[in-house]
Length: 115
Image 1: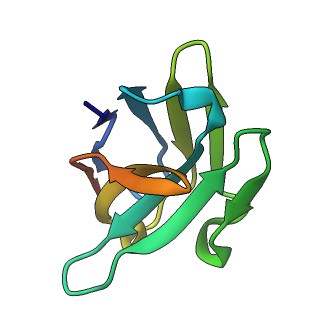
Image 2: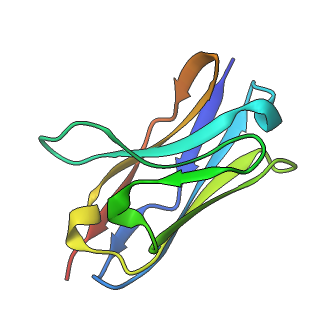
């Protein structure tokens, strides 16, 4: 059974930082491309960042220079370091795993950026 469990969300002031984590089980983590998506109220889910099994990364233009995705294959975990947060970053953040099959999704973690 595949499980992706996100954590690390919360309420933060503009300009602050958060680090999201996504722990995976039930998959051969090291061969999967992992991604972070977000969905704000009334909007479609969008890709925030992704990292391939060999470490190539991709970012949405809106987060380049502020967010960093990384992975630890030994811990079967993918991270999203979010700095210089803005109110428009407010959303539910989901991680996904894909490798031909899937994608598999986590349940999401809420990030709210507000003063």
